[in-house]
Length: 173
Image (cartoon, rainbow, N blue to C red; front, side, top):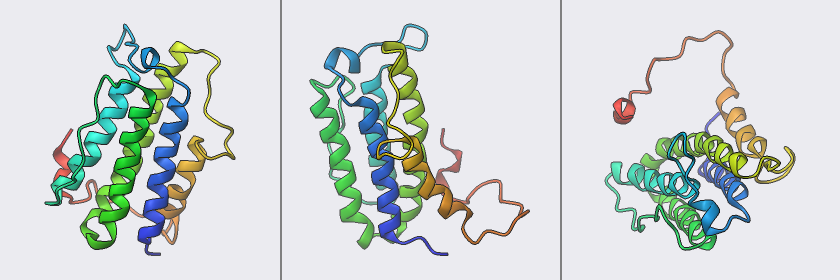
């Protein structure tokens, strides 16, 4: 089963919706609060996400035409604006650049990895915080379920998968 561009863009939107839900309601102090053990902060994670998405677009030889997302934003709105800009840029670029399909799928998974890091930081600040209920937009399940369906659709059981995709970036860390 071939995944359509519309499905890929929906997966990306859902992944970014989980990030939006994870940072919802945070003030600048909370976005920039640094965890002493790791030296990480939430705004740094969001900035990294946006910059990584810019990177993958550039790797296909396309000018992403996006500004760098600040590690120390002035507000939550600035973070949300960065996420919105990158989401809109994929919508513009994917239909005319089929080479972006694999990088877009990759950044969907990357966003969910960073969701876990953001959730960890958020729980350190607010121990009773949690993502929305699994059935709601912004939940981890709302984002991961379409990805899982694509990954498992029409796949034979017991197939050995290749060690790498063959994509030139497999050696990047």
